[in-house]
Length: 325
Image 1: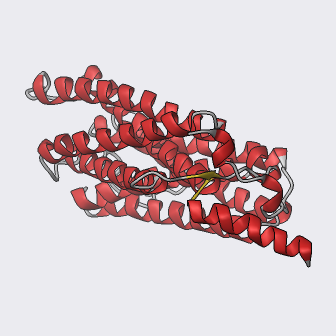
Image 2: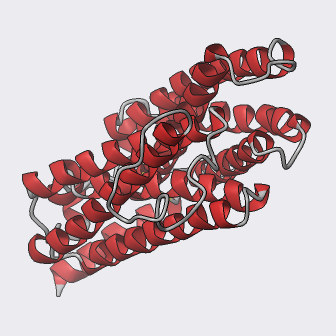
């Protein structure tokens, strides 16, 4: 496609009404990093079979504030809880900071969604302990953790300079299906794959569903990313997440194969989790979280920068009428 034929001039688009706040953006980036650490800590709890090492909740061995002896599985389970408490506090502080320095109501509402997610995440985590690790609640806990991370990454995107202070040029999306449709389907497929993976790790499903859906998910991720790179590779905001999705997909497939070998093939008779099983599984979970968040970023950039061809004609016409008036 020719760039000149696709572009809609930026002056006919609504002006940006918010200002970039460096501190708030950095806060969002730090929050995202902390949630990613929380996901890794949660994956360690599952991979090390440490889920009931601390048998009570919301207390730990009967105390709210005392740190128990960090031995065995307790060091994984209690560390996970402490990181979660810190992340919850950071999320509340970010919500307060946003209400003071950002004028976008929808962004402030999204911070409340993030607070709701972290509260629900804590409740699900507690129920997994109180109900002795039912696989469906544990899997929901894992999926919600990935969602929470994606929300934080989007908050970092929305508070960035490019999003707050620039008005992007629009490009025609004339693919069939549309690029945004592909991006949304990719998110759904990645979500389903993450749930199947969590259900397998918590002994709720066989690995077959995870393996079969991996083929579908890989195809959708590749299709979406290649569509963006081939048609809109000149747009940096679209090219970067699309290229990252391809890279993450390749790494994810590699770690998935390694996790299958170490856990299902070589480690099926292991009395306790082996270091190779733990490392490959945790890496597989972590890369999956990054892939989901990157899929959300790409979808949002597609929504912001691509439009249907009919809108290309209508927008300048409306602008000319306004000028004539």
